[in-house]
Image (cartoon, rainbow, N blue to C red):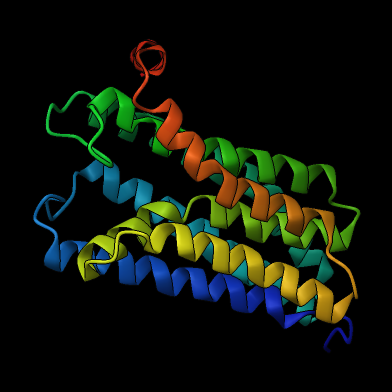
Amino acid sequence: MTNPRAEPFFFNMTIAMIVIIFAGFGASALYLPEFPFPPSTLLIFHGIVMLGWYILTASQARLIGKANFTLHKRLGQLSAALVALILVTGYFAVSAAIARPETSIAGMTPAGSTIFPTMDLLGFVLFYALALANRTNGAAHKRLMVLAGLMMLPPATARLGLAIGFEPLAGIAAFAIAGAFLVYDWRSRGRPHWASVLGLVVAVGGAPVRFMVGPSETWARIAEAIY
């Protein structure tokens, strides 16, 4: 049995993100000595948990396509536990990174560099929470769930950009993926969905915020207090 109202776009976008993750971290392992390989046990576990999120998201989209709504709801109830693991492992991964003097993102200090994963995690939580709040609104729910994955994609796109010598890739990828949602909306609905607009604003607008806030002494004190 198939669902005639299913939209393959959301499954396809999630698969595209999974491909980017493997490309980004694979390139990091092969070509970027500043990222030690193999990574720590904590990072490996965090990576597995994160990959589990994308696989769950893709599976959920596929279940909707097959009109298996019962299993879709059951798996959805497990997502909270997965999100909790993502946040806990993410927190300890950032805490471990800030303790290493050599940690630096975009030339920032270890404390300043924490702005990047912190905003990734906050963006992820924001879209996941909105997806839960809109779980009875199918159009919003599926957009928000897939966009939650986009919020956690910068570590992969940034590594891929460094590996190929094109550092703006992370920003361009965020714009392209979020923009694809708006293009899809225009073609399928005739107007942009508010969730897609929010995805573009947060994914693209978050970049300058990172670079403005990260180097500040105020953020350094906040990061040291948190982590």
